[in-house]
Picture 1: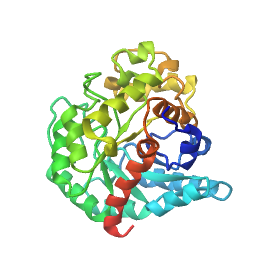
Picture 2: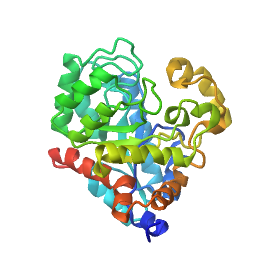
Picture 3: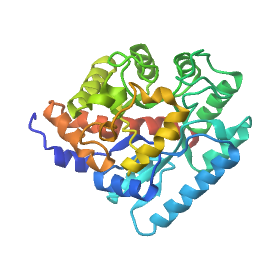
Picture 4: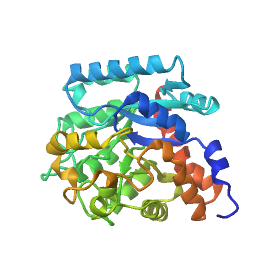
Length: 342
């Protein structure tokens, strides 16, 4: 363990989860607090038009305001809000969209969402929209002119561009188009599991060369070819962190668990007819049992300490562990968000 104390490191570290894709909001916040998670890119909007997006943002901001009256939690508009959460043994919520659909054809809607708190924008989710192609589109077209306009405005406002569910060609074009670093907030290795949802080595290198960060996801069926059927161990999860550290360097690797906090077996059954019916390609490998959805022992942010323990057991130094747990994402947020004085 190289003389490190995992619990002390965990308590001292700023821990940032690259994405939480929604779910039960109050339970999510409680799990973030239990796990010592300092900040989470929380999915306020997955898809939908402008009005739907406004309503979803309004609902979650209302819930957040209520919780903040009794819990140490706040919206993270800048890195100072994240540092506040650390200093107060609390947690902070970064407003993220997993698709740009709510801005419709109006770039001014992007400005409005920014003023409401939007700080991370994924260009598209799996499918084609007005900006780009998702990784579920077989045509794999690149950015549209509007997509380039949105990227330019994100750069001006200080919104981090997320490319996790974006198609290969659109991803590479977006990296080149952006003036600021970009991110894969939650993804896994195509070299281990060659599915369209996963990212290739040249994509990882391009993100790192731009100064960005890659968050490693904890969904079993993405981590391994038969992960949904056999389950995936923490060791297999850490193997992907090791691989990326070797490929792109310690300064560009983070965690992006992609865990729906509080999901039950009943919720999972319902997803068969909703989420998986809409995006059947994300059911990679076919049917799988609920207990194999996530890495064994890592089905909640409340259990995130096992990553710290695992990294220490693998011989990572204290400074390296702190970078992976959240230091790298914090530095990225500082670079991107500060361009607008945030």
